[in-house]
Length: 521
Length: 87
Image (tube, each protein chain N blue to C red):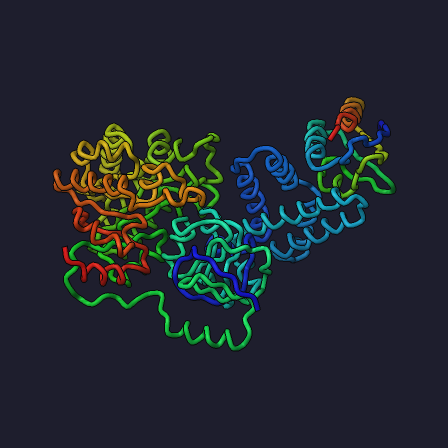
């Protein structure tokens, strides 16, 4: 038994078996009824695209070029395809080939060249990871609860995970404002950061206490049973709040249909932020208008009368799409991202807008434009939206002509022109995470400037107040959808400033409502 | 069919990067069958994994063989690539 602790964690309790990433469970997609040969081939091309989409320099870039070459190696493809023809499943065949080819390296009497077998294993692991096949999920016990252990996780890693099995995260890098933390809170599962993961092995029994920041590896029976007692009395999702007076709307942030459903179960007043990226990150190509439409329409139906705020594609920065070629940038957070990409690439933006508009026939849709820095961007986006409306008219497809259009206020520029923006839109939504990062010039993933990344800093609070005043002047609603919204200590200030809604992770809807009901302004 | 022997001089042997380059070179001679032999093993030169598995460390003698329309150029280009690896 070993105990480790950290002061960086998100709340909750969990126990399960350690699963070292990148072997995290792959989500089973419905379209994976394809044959093992197709599964293998599409995983191969997905892996190539993934490598091609990875920005790297120096040694890493050399390694990746070698891996790319290995993916098209006839020895690998022929070995795997021969095994598949003999009746093996795609995953088993790649595992067998990985074993067979890497064992060919054992006879090499040069240590450095022999260790290239690790590259073979790595490439095969990547292929397996890109197989979203049911075989992958069923090859290990689907009932088993897992704690994902990794040095670092990126948004593209987590979208592949099957969250019906993941009970918690243990990570070396990251902070409570990272994407993993936000995701973990959304699912009501704990995440620990700053834990050295080198000594944790696949299959270790882990007890994770996100409330105290403690990790117990391979607990003894007494510790385990004590933990079980804590676990049974702890509920990550508080009961839906009782009826009462709540001064502002409590919306939920959602990044999937499952989260929209959870938000409604937890009594949210609507979805304040529906992140559309998951649609784009799941597959290996851009989602079609129809695929997007079906997802948005399903979310809209789940919300019923309540608003569903769909944020248009917010990629760039730390969020890349493997199949979408974007120029390499030295400063991605100051670069080509979000609305800038959408406006420059109408072939990306128009299908999304059309899909959102079509879904507005099924509920109350609000369109949210991310990373605005200029009024012209809003005007251009509105022009595209009205063009799409005209197209739909011509095609006799129904939509809501009164669909609301709002902007994310998350850049210093948008704060400074908030009054002008407020005249052009129906609502504001403040992304406090990016806003804090840009106002304070502090990368939220960089622990050495963590003290600067502080939403309560006078500069950020001043920015929030400017935004709320600009919205009040034009009588438009203004909400917060960043981490600050669920911070109980901040909520009284936000209410006093005049914010009209708080959008919080699904799991925190009831808790937030209860907090708000006790606040006296 | 043309054959030529060359000795690996690179201190780290033919590691991943030069082998990547070698395989890409081999692929540019499509239609010509190219193999590498070391010790008692002969492998197809269009397979990076096969070449890496030969463990071509410094001092290893490699035989490059080519058969096809561009056999002469292919052998010459590959031998000179192997000689040019210095790291």
